[in-house]
Image 1: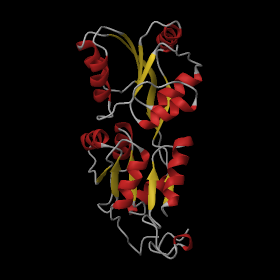
Image 2: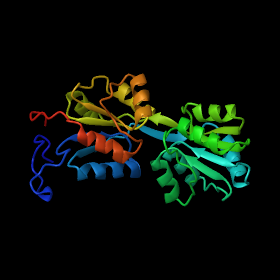
Image 3: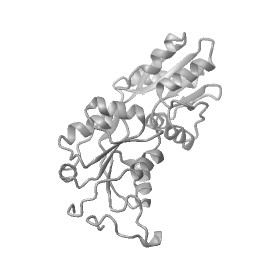
Image 4: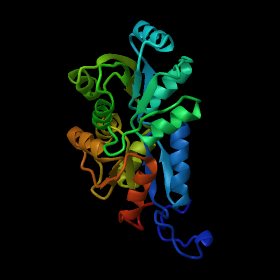
Length: 271
């Protein structure tokens, strides 16, 4: 990796440097998701640095989750709602059965793709506002009669969806499917962030933003902070981060495109 030379022409592009040529971009989650993001970054010439800042732990109330999944399989709910791809991992791990008559609403194309990848159906992805609030508003517009809804969420998720659906007259059972926990990065990665060797940090959730603030107390002004959509940008700012780039939509492709368009700092002496 020729990390010190940002504008080295790439033979595969006919001598034209790729938009992220040589830039080091911190990817805050590992696993298949992180590998996929890293591959997309490499295609644009970046040097991805996978450094998982968060991980997911089992809920502290497994009995409640078990009961909810049993009731789901028995057809007790008209709707199931998910707001993250991690919840899909929980469903798959517990071999959850979603009856054909139970409609499934999810926030984000990433979550929808994860559901379909493991064989679950998806009936609704918010069209305009791809957020919990946008999903609630669209469900309320569709369902004018009270419905039974199961919302599976993380321990720290804000109860926006549950509150709006209840206010609209629906019967909602809100169940914690998993907990989010911080993962300390290596000393080398922490040092690379502090020194400015990392050119951009991807922020994909409020939880990631909080870990960035906690683990990297001194981030150079030249380091680009990129948020995966307006709602995450708002959460990041609330956590104390100064956000430079906001993806237009809450997708990885949109996030990477936004970073590629932003003029990242090029310091030839950084190596």
